[in-house]
Image 1 (cartoon, rainbow, N blue to C red):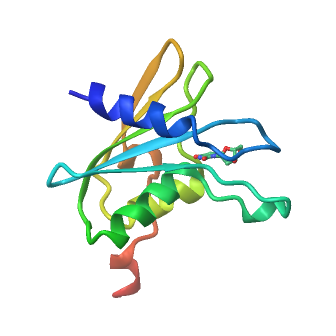
Image 2 (image 1 turned 135 degrees about the horizontal axis):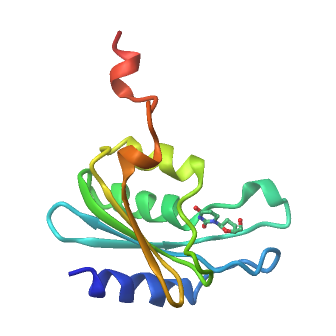
Length: 129
Ligand code: THU
């Protein structure tokens, strides 16, 4: 069930630091062993330094030693719910294209598998050739 992951994403979304966009994002990333890592967006007066919620969650997970992931929930306040940006798709892809991506808005939900969000992904295997 994704209800608990949605709850975690919604909870961390409240902590978003987004004084410029006012666009709150919360992410909850579930590791293969069930551990959950959360992230939220952090903006800067130097706009380009902004960190997305998804990449924040990946950072927390990797710092804790997690590597394989099964699902990520991304919570926003828009319907249809926002999907992860291109940069976040690429960093998520680093850890596997089978990740289930669940986007939730106030009223609706969308689901994908990461490989469908990032076709022909540039990946580690490409570097090995
Ligand atoms: N944002 C995310 O946190 N994740 C995404 O996948 C797309 C965008 C944030 C960055 C910025 O703080 C705000 O949403 C508006 O772009």
